[in-house]
Amino acid sequence: MLKAVIFDMDGVIIDSEPMHHKAYHDMFDEVGIDVSTDLYESFTGQSTLNICRRLCDQFHLDETPEALVSLKRKHYKQFFDTDSNLGLIDGVLDLIKNYYDNGLTLVLGSSASMSGINMIFEQFDLNKYFKAKLSGADLKQSKPHPEIFEKAADATGCLREECIVIEDSTNGIKAAKSAGIYCVGYDSFHSKNQDYSNADKVISNFEDIYYHKISEEFNAK
Image (cartoon, rainbow, N blue to C red; front, side):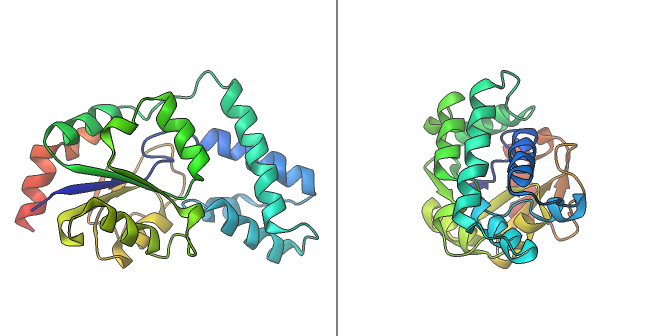
C-alpha cells in the first residue's frame, strides 16, 4: 500500500536548471576550464561537491573541490536573489497538495545543498507539506548511489515497499531503483538527455500520478 512519496527538487519541484547552468558556467570560466555539453549533462542529479571532485580530477585543477563548490554557490545565490522568473514546475504544487490531503507522508531527497533547499522551501512555503528534507551534500555518497533515498525512506517512517520516488534524472532514477523503491520518471523539457528506461513509470504531466491514479497502479503491482 502506498504511504509515502519522496520528491527530488531540481527539475521536479523547481525549474532551477537555468540558474545552476549559469552558476556552473560562470564558475567554469572563473577557473579556466571548458566543460562539454555531454559532460555537463552527466552531472544531473549529483551533488555539487561530487561534481567538483570530478572536475578537479578531470582537469587537474589546483583549486580544491571545496573551493569550486564555494564559487558555484556564490554565483547561484546571486542569481537566486535577482531572478524574478524563478517558479515552481507547472502542476507540482497541486500534486503536493493532492498527496498531502490524501494522507501521504512527503519527504524531499535532493542533491542540492540544504541552504539551497531551504531557500526554495521558504520562498514557496513548502515546509508545511513535508515531514523531512534530506540534502545529498550532507551524505558520503551521491546519486546514482542509493544512500539519499535509503535515508529518505527511513525518514518517512514507512517501508521502502510503501514509498515512491519522483525523479527527473538518470542518476536519480538509478539511485531510487538501487534503493529498491518504485520510481516515477518525470520527463519534461527541463531535463535534457536523461535516460528514463529504468523508471517503473514515466510521465510528462503530474496529473497522471495524482493520488487516486498512482495509488491504484502501485497497489496493484
